[in-house]
Image (cartoon, rainbow, N blue to C red; front, side, top):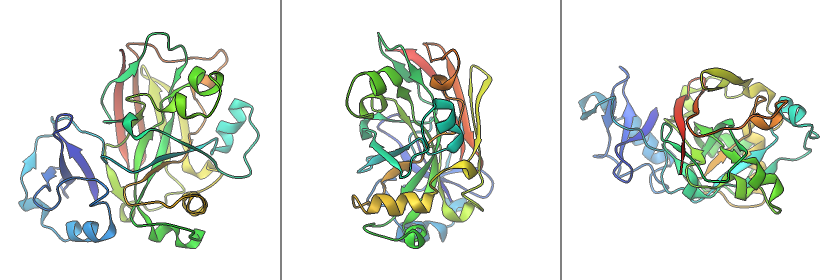
Amino acid sequence: MKLLRVGQKGQEKPAALDNDGKIRDISSHISDLNPDHLNFETISKLQSADLASLPEISLSERIGSCITKPGKFIAIGLNFSDHAAETGAEVPSEPITFMKATSCINGPNDDIEIVSGSKKLDWEVELGIVIGKHTKHISEAQSQDHILGYCLVNDISEREWQIEKMGQWVKGKSHDTYGPIGPYLVTKDEIADINNLKMSLDVNGKRMQTGNTNTMIFNVNVIVSYLSKFMSLQPGDIITTGTPPGVGMGMKPQQFLKAGDTMRLSIENLGEQNSKVVAL
């Protein structure tokens, strides 16, 4: 299934795409795509529902974040071998882990804020993992039993805050609007091979990132198992898994976002995002 949330901010309804690509209101089945409902039992019930009989929502409606109020928004850094190379970093021997504040979550097509004094705002197209059941100390072989589905993430990053402001990366990753997710939460059955998905990101119509999940250093099963050794994971938790080459920080000279810039990003079978940078 492709699940989404549609409506104005704070008033989104849970929805699903039917076989004809129409958006159907599923609020008669669940109240929202939140941790209370992001589990395998709910997905099974929705998959047996007659979507064509449910109210249709206009395609012109705003699409919100595909998940609301997750307990955790976890990120993996330098997880593509070709991205590590462009930054001059050594290939990590274990997943580099940091957190994004859940308050940074944004709709896939909503504006991205750039604050006064921000000099190094960057883009990162990423694959997001959505957890579907309590996960603690599991093996790599067990990971797929705990992954509900996947989504598209733009890991917006203010590089000066991330690298030059001392401390952890979280400061450069967590400002409001720095976590666009969606448009869809795509269940696993719709993805033939999660380790071979094309990825891309354009800025102002120019291709910046072209990649594929097949160059991930640590695949999704490794990541979920690894994280479960250090923290329990709960339904609705999001893990964003790193970006391919082509970020502004890696260019010579470096290039960063400014007010008025537009971004278009996509991952095969997960949809696309279209956003604009606006001055706060």
